[in-house]
Length: 124
Image (cartoon, helix red, strand yellow):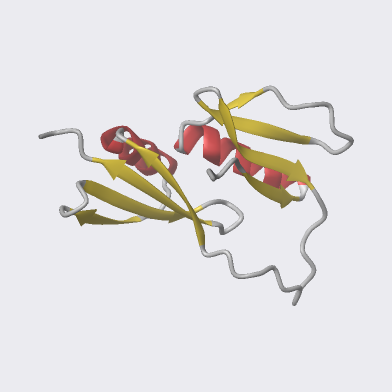
């Protein structure tokens, strides 16, 4: 079994901020989305729509949303990612894991979703 996509449901303004974040900072791109009754976007990595954004009402105060901690992505473009994060003024932390040959970058999306990007070392 493989993960197909994540879906983020947010009010229109926040959905647009999420789109800018995933495209401009994480390097995804908008692509084909079927004609659903709700507004939204499918954001692609290569030819796979891995982040779905859909417009929905704001979460009510005190409404329990579950225990999802974060979503993780994988890349080999550490330097490019760090440049985009710095240019956008996004705070992040990092952890180099030499045993796994990767650097982990931790940040939050505009709607406070935890994002982990595992940057695989390409220098041998």
